Length: 512
Image (cartoon, rainbow, N blue to C red; front, side, top):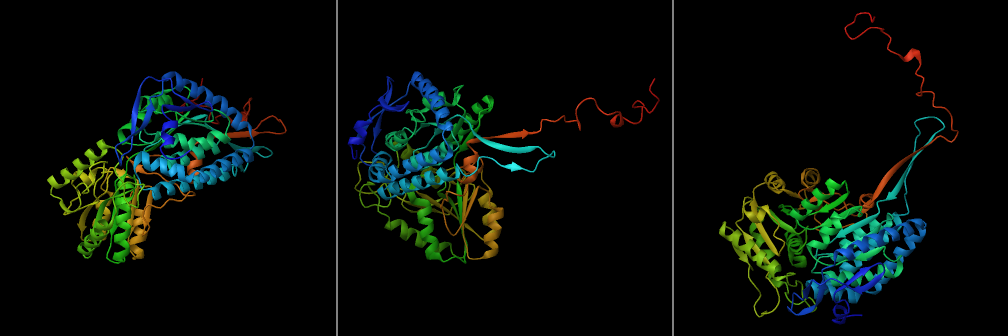
């Protein structure tokens, strides 16, 4: 299955209890190619009854999955990874058609997903608890790592396969069932991605329901879902955290970023400019860890701007299925929002140094130009909020301390990047920059074995690494006395010798 036929075959489809089937929902919405504005297919707004069915099926499948050995679960996950690797071309083509990113970036996303699944296939069976030094001689004290049950994974449009792999693989490796609710902009890609999971897992263990806010809300509020992993906006993340808090339901919340990018004079400016262009413009800037606030030392500011502009000018913008570096934004409303962000920045005094408009000759598709804004100040709105588009707003700073202070002056704390060859600056940055991740001279990289997540309004919890596995497990303490002996060191009757020795009341007088 490949090309446009994929979208036709998945028209109004959901994956429930091991079956790809046409949803019985009456409501739906068009799936639109952001590069051509062509309608590709229709997406179902999954009904309440179907969601209830999926939750029930998930619980039944989870019990069967957990009954398998750790080795059997790992082998099934490796089989999934093998199939996804073989599906690289159709998956990448589907993602590019559905959300617009260049085919190369879509293909990379398949590779990253395969890598994460393989990683969790192994570490999921590596540690199921630990034996600790006992507190009572002869007793056995240890922990068990147990699944939570049915995990809801709500993904955004920008990295639908990778983020589902990060969360879904960790959840499966921990012994859970997964119900995915993808973005309405990338649901067809997610259904195709789910083919490999459905082939190798018990029916109902990995399911996909489609739709917008109502489907997600029903899953979050459902009394029988056991955990929610969400990536998306701050308001929605806060609402989910509040609902789950009332229900005492664990969550993983990854919301917006507004990552700083600091440039110091010691760094090689050619390398810095290339890294900055990639960090700002990859995936049309639609990345939670994009470089969104540039703080450039005054000694290299002008040269940096000149070289960044040269790289921006060289970017090929167009349909992601062609030989391009940057595709369109995912939707018309996203482009409208982003253009409003640029207009507001200029109203507040920013200078439009490069880009800022729509590419010439493209009368179809939601394309924008890579943009550079100079003369920016930290109090501008574009520095306070996530632009989520291909903009590089630049603020000139006079010192490393000024850059650190400005970088940390944000409600967000996801990632941060510094370019320097000064070891003292690098070491200070790792300690002092706010956020869950700090990149020194290596922007935006991920490691399956290292945690991903933020602080402040950027979210709660971690994905990837051992931390990501623990997100989807509970820990039970087990205490065993194999000899079944009396615990006389603290049972009744209490020894007279351990009673209060004074024999008097609190006032110091003799008791009657």
